[in-house]
Structures are given as structure tokens and as C-alpha cells.
Image (tube, rainbow, N blue to C red; front, side, top):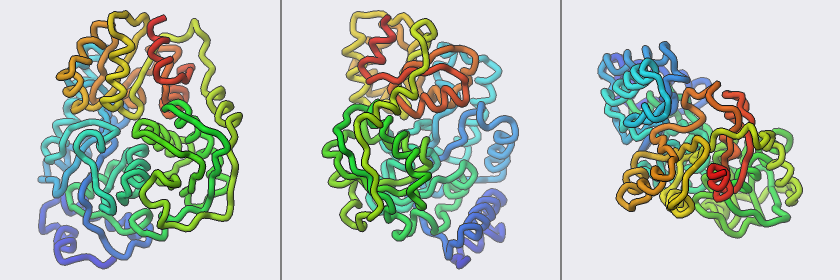
Length: 399
């Protein structure tokens, strides 16, 4: 690989052990994928934050990098942790787990990383501009950044994202190159959809189709005429979860659709197919539902406002988690939404989510509006699931 003199100095250890190890990771990654050089990044988002996923080996790696002088060169934020960092007691988290999770956060803090702990960094201050090269890890955020924001990032692993944060560069391959952002499959929508549930179901449908028809996992979607931030957030999470897609183009909605050729290979999606995807995520009986979780990906302030209006003066009858970023929680506090929601008995689980928190065995049946949450609830935690529209999921918590 062609390295600048500064990059070469880091590789030779002239800027400390942590920077050297970081460059070794990036150079190895670049050689594997045939990158010719490094590209400077404007921001980083790091996954591998929950101690439930990291374990002691991951914590040891982070501590080593922090203790050997690792310092961020660019804006860097974190994916959700395994618990609410301020209110973990209310989540039923053990003191033993909390202690280890706090050690993880302290290691990141020591390296200068902002411990915002959210899967929607673009809603919490880490929002790149069109064309910016970045190094992000969280799958839903990667897809949103590439597709909706027009930034350029591969789906980094936790170590490679941390390496990019400590060096300010990442290998120039994959979605950093324009030729890899060109779609090879056209999806024609023969129906209208709305809401986070249906957009999530569509992501599942297209994600399942990608394996058969697409080689580079970039699709061009026609026939969707309007899509909100929340709907695109849900779709990004789902198509990444079920299809491993890191980018899509949506005609007249995403910023790069007019810069790419429309693929000749096409598939048509009818409403019955979307409905079938929804039904495939519903296997929980009424008697099994004991957990309602909203915020996968993390809720926007608009979604929190809807939640507050629906819960005002009422009481939930099931365990209900509201997962969002610390930044949006503070806005919710200021607007009075938090007090309404908490008076209703719902729990703000900030800094975390139902995917990465250590909750296996605690619940039987999950209700959510998120196709991604259903996937991990079943696969990781062995929960039964039911997916509903956002407002209907709130109503389920009140039953």
C-alpha cells in the first residue's frame, strides 16, 4: 500500500504503540481488500461496546490500547452499551455486569472517544456531510450514512473502526470507491407502504432477495414516493440485518440515485409479499407477550413525542423499554416528555437497546415495531416476537 510519511511513521511506532497497532490493523485490512492507499476520514462510529458482546478479551484489548497512549484523531462516537450508564439499576442489570461495562466505557473515554452510545449517531451530533469519507461500524447507521446522507463508509468491525479513530484514516476500498456504489438490481414497488413496521418488513423482503439477484448488494428502488427519517431509519436497519446491504438507492429520495445507471435486472414487490414478511415475524401468543421495546434503531425525538401523547395519563401493564440516545433523552426531559412516559411506568433505557443488553432468559415474548429487533430477539435471546405498527405497539403495552 502507498502510505504517506505520517502514516508510515505511525506504522513504524514513532507515534506510540497504540497508533502502531492501529496502523497494522488498517494496513492488513487494506492488503486483504486490495486498497491502494488510505483515505482520511471525518468521523468514526465504533461498535463492540456492550460487555455482553465484548467479554473479558475485548475489554483487555481496549484497555491495552488506552493504556498505551491511544488518542482519537477525529470525531469518534460509540454504539450502544449493554446498559443505561446512569440508570442501569432500573433495567435489572447486575452490579457485576455494570462494573465491567463501566470499565469498557472508561477505556473508550481515556482514548478521547465520545461515549454517546447510540446506533443513530446522525441524530446525536455525528452527522457527516454528503461525500465525506467516514469509518462507521453499526450496520443500520452504515446503511443510512451511505444511502440517505451520501457519506462513504464500509461496515467496519469494532477493532478497525477504533484503528481509524486513532489514526484518522481508513483503507480506500469498497464503498469509498464510486464504482462500488453502483446498483445491480432494480426493485419495483407495486404497492404503497408506510410506517416503521412496513418499511422494516420491506427491508426484510429485499434483504432476502439480494442473495439471489445481487452480487454487490446495492439495489435501486422505484415506486416509493415519500419516506420519513424514521421510515428510512427502519428500512436501513432491516435491509442491513436481513441482506447484509450497506447501501441502497431510492428514486427521488436518496441523494445519489440520479448519478447511477438504473439496473436492467428487476424484481417486483407486491403488498402480499410485504404482508407475508410481517406475518413471518409474528409467532408470540397473547399470553406470551411480557416485553415491549421501542427504539431499534434508537428513537428520534419525533417518535418520543408520539409516545408521550399516547401514554399521557395511562399506565403500562408490561415491561416497556424506550431506547434512545442520551442527547434525545435530554431533549425529551426539557420538553416534558420524559416525565409523562415515566409516570406511565415505561422505562427509559438510554445508551443501550434490546439487542445488546444482557436480557436472555428474562422475557418470553417481545412486541416491537422493528424487524431488526425481531431478528435478534429470536436469534440471540430466543424470545417469541410480534411486530406491530409503532402506535399499536404502544397500545399493546397498555393491555
